Amino acid sequence: MNKSPLHRTILVGLLAVMGASAQAQGLRSSGGGSGLSAAAPALGTAPPMAPPPALPSTFGSARTSDGIAAIVGNQVITDYDLQLRVEATRQQAQAAGATLPPPAQLRNQVLNQMIDELALAQYAEQMGMGVSADTLDRAVAQVASNNKMTVPELRRAVEKEGMGWTTYRDQLKREILISRVRERSMAQLPTISESEIDEFLSKQDAASASPQAAYEIAQIFLPVAQNASPEQVAAVKQKMDAIEAQLKAGADFAKLATEDSQGEGAKQGGNLGMRPVDRLPTLFVNTVRDMQPGQISPVIRSAAGFHILKLLQVGGEQGAPTTAMQSHVREIMLSASTEAQRLRAKAELGQIAQAVQAGKVKFSEKAKELSQDPATASKGGDLGWVLAGQLDPVLDAALEHLNPGDVSEPIVMGNKVVLLQLVDRAVRPLEASQKRALAREILQRQKAAQDFDELVRDVRARTYVHIPEND
Image (cartoon, rainbow, N blue to C red):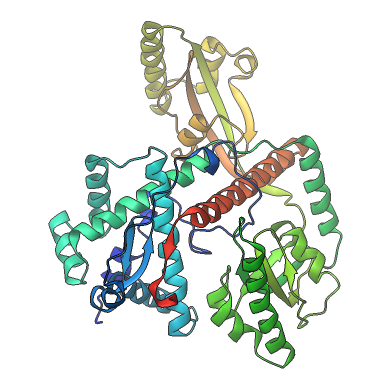
């Protein structure tokens, strides 16, 4: 197919329009699964997955005439749609300078990603999530705007690439649904105990003192569904044992990883890059700790499946960070328990903001005079130096748009209205409390990513999937 540069934009990565995407293993993140978060409903509480569609009586011939690549729940992935996605993925990888697996392996990886997407979108709909026509129209308009096009121009470009406009909108709708599932899963970050933070910081301190604080590792990974039968587990293990035998016979690790691995880094020969120990699974660290660069591990089992690891390089000291970007912030807070009070507070703080920006008054003086926060009013509203994430998310979001010296718009937060001033922003040494705050955030996001990872695996395992070519 002769594809234009727009091809990658319209067929790959549309989740970027709606927010973060997870591309490492289909929809999976790089972390391993460890149970569903409170924010992600357990699959046991969801309505049952749609039953498999009735197959046509001439299904054998339909494979050829209709070009069915896979049936997922109550929907079909056609060979043509798969071909479009494979080509888009190939062009995207070439543009990034990435190494591609053989065509058959690439096709299998892309097909599995498309299956994951359909399964998760169907799950979202069964959980009551939907995408209104207005929302979909706005998303389409955003894609067009991002590509400096009108919507009609985008439609012509999509159709020129060989994809129907309805199919394109359906794909975008699925990706909005997937984004919402992910947002729902991540909305309520998991609880982290003080002991977990202590352990995390202790490991980082140990890493700082260790000459082997970081490892560059390559992996070959074959997944195992959480509810897999013993026979299914044995079949995956048998395939991994065959790969191990090839490695022992002198086969190239990177080549086998590119061809057979279904994990992160597969397209780069399994290379996960140089990572400090706190960014590697404990199982991996324990496996490679006593290995020498170039050595290959035996087959190891994790909650996600089977792995073979190769230690590529040992890094130097990389422990806990000692500095971070911080913001020096001042506030003026006015109590407002009724709507009338909130309107008056917004008007008053709005006037103060304009006066401060015009240089007519000093923010700190107005804070001492008016602020009703007893903890900061006497200090001119000074909140000190704070890390991203230390303040309420609403205040954090307001700070992101400010430059040093700027004053925010009045911010309504429940029974109070707040005005912020960003005094300065700089990289500064971390205090002990800030190190703990950073550790908590890292651990929360790791757990949330693992929970979403497990959700995707569980949804896939509970969804009817039929791949005709496997018959």
